[in-house]
Image (cartoon, rainbow, N blue to C red; front, side):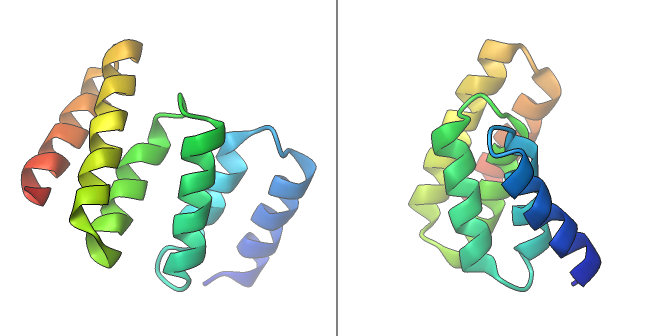
Length: 103
């Protein structure tokens, strides 16, 4: 883990608490080393910024690794609904593929 990047991302979250990107980027950075902290950040983004589409794929992917799979499928389904609403066909296809793998 790059400590400089981690410090920067934590500072970004503190300085821009209403921007989902900082939380999401911090979660991505922590996924490999601190999966439970990353999961908490993905959940925070899902709750506070439900239209932030990039969060859904990585949130679900982590849930597939730490379980339960039913929670991952729920996140995928919510992300697919957001992708449809935003007419983001690329992300919709990625989430559909992930759901197929999860089933």
